[in-house]
Length: 316
Image (spheres, rainbow, N blue to C red):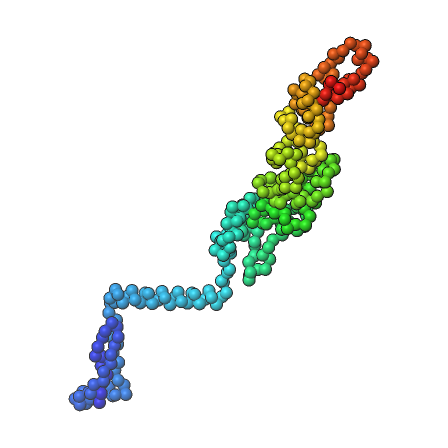
């Protein structure tokens, strides 16, 4: 006869041991082997702190693992929108260009124009009309904006690759078109990009007069040319009071020589004192001399040049 007894209690665990039952106990009516006695020891009142913490951590891990599986299984993952800071990571050169020359486009930023990015989206390049309403300006209604404008430096415009720029230029500069129409010249027959390499009036952005024309004198500069000639109406020659005689003499050398050799008081004057403001203008003699002769003579010869045939040589 054998009896099952508890032999060890450790942290709430029970180890069972089978031991023989003495004959005296069996005779006294001990329970048969088939009805073995099972004794369960009570768990200790408190588990050590380290083991309690281990149990708590295990429980938390199990809960976390279960929660993660639930979110993944339910398909709650969402795409994270790109920011301008993300764009710089791959497109640093473009971002630098925009930062340096973007003008008003700087305020828009990368994602203000590029609302999609492959492979999630294919509508990467926006239409200029999204912001520049064709109904607001004739210029905005033009096609092929990127022929002249790079969106990352929109006002740094190069015309050298554009076949014809005049229709686009005149939508913003109609006054220049009106000036050329009022004063026809070889310049009016040219396209704008014949003279204007880039948009603007900075150094190197346009051809100078001396790139196509020889100066009236060897020492003339572009600033000298512009004192008399306007590029969009070059044959309508106007000037101020500071034009030296040498400028006029460079084209009218014969008249300058005659005036100098005459020895008259006119030779002491600058050309613009008689031909003031506009090329070809002749100031009437009476504006300076009034009527120096007898009234009868002025009545008989109302035109001074009847006698003084050459104002540049009054002795003739």
